[in-house]
Length: 87
Image (cartoon, rainbow, N blue to C red; front, top):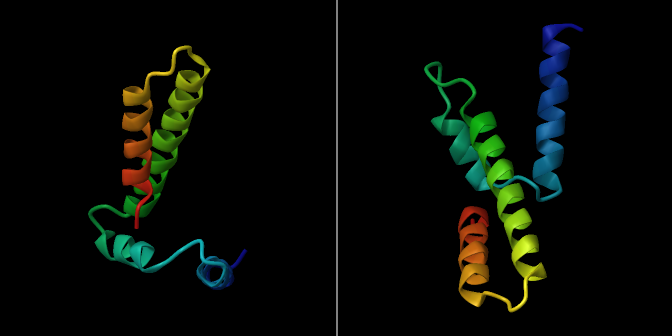
């Protein structure tokens, strides 16, 4: 596939994600931090977010199955998840 055609497809997909509300100004700010010294910055940040979120959701699920519930632990997990997801 031609490089210019691939770039156009990426631009269309990126705009679609903005139009659907999946991306916002924070994503643009992340992109601005990416440079030649760290060309995969956005990818690395997104990967870390999804890895951490997956781990936190798994921890929440396990904590909710225990009896009695440890509300301090649940609060800690929710606080971590909210903190990493907040705009």
